[in-house]
Length: 203
Image (cartoon, rainbow, N blue to C red; front, side, top):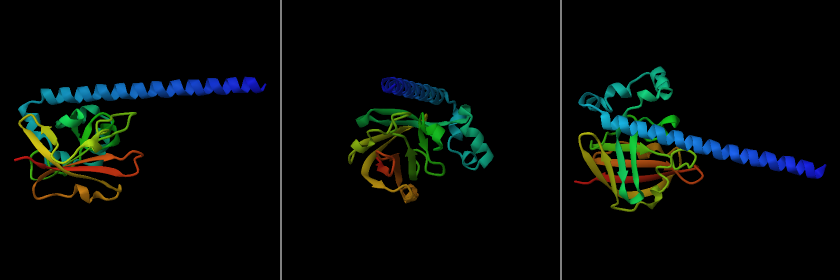
């Protein structure tokens, strides 16, 4: 009887493990597919869509509209491509930082500066193995490493100035700046705190 119970438990554990592995593979495949679609959308943008990126109209949508956007992939607009050569990042950036978007892209904090603008361009990304892990090596960046943000019109290069850890409620890292700066945000291992990387536009 005891042996039978052990065998049943072993089967349950094996099935659970296979299910978890399968679910992880499926989620990573879905994230990869949606990132590819967002990149394709960026490449196909025409002049009209470029001129509307990050416009005030996008930033003042109603709560109901924002809720709809979370459930409608076609409403996600690519802002730019984020390229960080040192840690092999080349990823499309979408508008917003809701959980669904961050599963397959890097997100742009609404109401922060756009690429190349004066102010603080703030971007968030996961380092979660289950979904997207674009920022998994963000901790490896050092002073003067390049962070490239490519729009359809131009390419902007920021140089890393500093990196540090903050608590989740320390949102002042997203505050506007007088000069052209960039702030990258991701979770620390264990997701209890946030890793912040800051840079300034190379001129």
